[in-house]
Image (cartoon, rainbow, N blue to C red):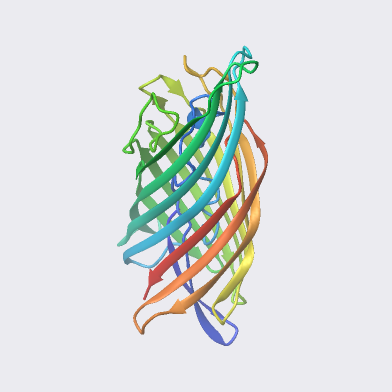
Length: 324
């Protein structure tokens, strides 16, 4: 649920692995309120953000990590319960997120204690056809840009158990992003959410890594339209080989399932509990810029499938971490 700095000896060389499992909302931007499950058709947690190093916590000290989610092309089609209104949407989204965190010198239950926050900037362009299925309707288009909802992590705990590494954390999502209830798209979701998470990483001296991150998001009601999005379960995973020459390759993916129904006067699609699965390749390389500064670069491409009642589309990710 946070950036990770970890040093391992692989073969004859020493390779520093720095990953960015961020617990953020850096997902696709909001779409029309009845696009699919969860209000605006997206989840609060962005599946796929917590794969590499999910159980690792860096050593004490201040840190700053920049993570850039480059692009997602998503679409959705939905019909109201009475069949009178249909919505078809397409959204292109660019996101840039920054994690700021601090691993304190304090210990709780034998674990290192850390805090953090994530802030982001988002640009989204959406087109939508909304109206009766039997009547042609004009296309609505809109592009928005701005600062998204803030994410705050007041508690992050990390344990190292030889080759196993465990994190337990709690985050809350604050509705600080711009929100317009009359627009077909907004930067913010206008709802609070709370999320406990568990991360686990197994890593050996040969550079093999298996990571798993699970969490449960509890959403509150949007006070503007009294829409209550259902709660959500998510699980991210990665199977990766790290090499002593700085390269890294593997497979990453995620599974998402909404566990409770949407409700409220604006929930015109009914319960519509969403789900999606993603899977794709991941690769990276560490570059030393100076004696005191290195950057870990990696990218991945997620193919989404088995989507139901949810905005979905393939995603291209680029990540960069600067460290000593």
